[in-house]
Image (cartoon, rainbow, N blue to C red; front, side):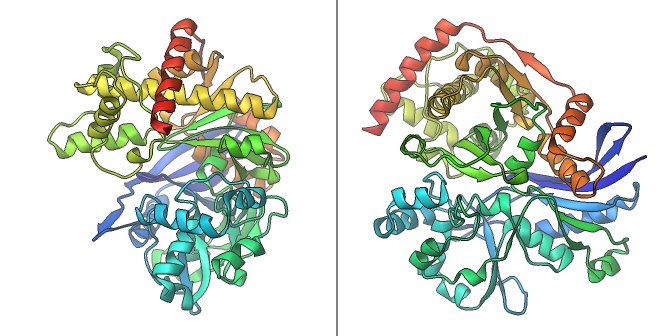
Length: 492
């Protein structure tokens, strides 16, 4: 029997609607609608264009009428961002983008009154300026009138679920990214909210991934002339959905979800908030069945995406395939950056900042597009090695393989470099991991797939997987020593 569901997957730069079909023990996906996600700068502030994205959701629903009927709809997005609706249910203001520059100052101020050691012990979330806790602190300090008129605070995926269904809820995987949820009780943490001076009642009850929260509302069905369907709160954080699609049921798997951000981690049954985990700045985020995604956030392909945008603004347009080819023509490890240096987070002239970093650290300065790309690729792989070895040490596990999933694995250069840098084989696939995990969660919620183990077996049988063996390990070991020396310089 055939079962169809509709999945929306929002990334930091684009989104798409995909029809997922389960038939004869295999999942197939079909793209229905694709659109860009274009943040908007207003003065010094950087916003998500939420109403435009809601328009794109509706456009996808209209296009879906040309395809087969679907039983449910699920939405996954990036984490940490939120919006505020008033007591009448209206969105008060567009949510700020997590790369808005105000949050670094807010982080510093909040941690002066609430030490990070305590925050980490409660929430298990790494220290990074865009965490929702610091965004809320910034709003309380600078735009308190929004919270004064608040009815509910909704995380970004939950905003879209609310627009679709009229139901206000909070997905566990999204809530876990905020540094507002107690990682042990899995409820909003009173101590953190007291420190913020914000009432916990503004938050919605936390629901586990795979919860059917309602149906597409009558008003949306009437406006778009569509049939009603169930709205499933999937593992709404895009990485949580991607991890569901890791095609392995082995214990102690290591993965890299590779997109705008690179998330390197493993699955645990319970959180790890040890001193070693805190020192290495690992994070504990929620997954399907209440699992813990113990992982490290790494800057990821943002560096390549934003470099490409910069060159396009300068009148030079390259495809991602062209950038990879230019990188392959250059010698590796001539220059190395710390991809998580804060200078690389805001949008703008990433190539110029790469050159500046190399100049400041006394390295050869990459000049050509290919040299800059090779620098970024190699530096990402070395950062993966650093995080991978730390994770092995913290968890007391030797991981035999790294599963790379997500759109970044279309870049086979990065897969090869990762295998060499980490010294273990890389299994790459599926490419569309996030949307596949979203689809699998809906099918589990509807009872068509019985367990995550069955889902992973089906995914492994449905999508192509590539394998990369480690090469040139001595060369990578030498490059890693250079990387560590550069880290020492920049940390001083």
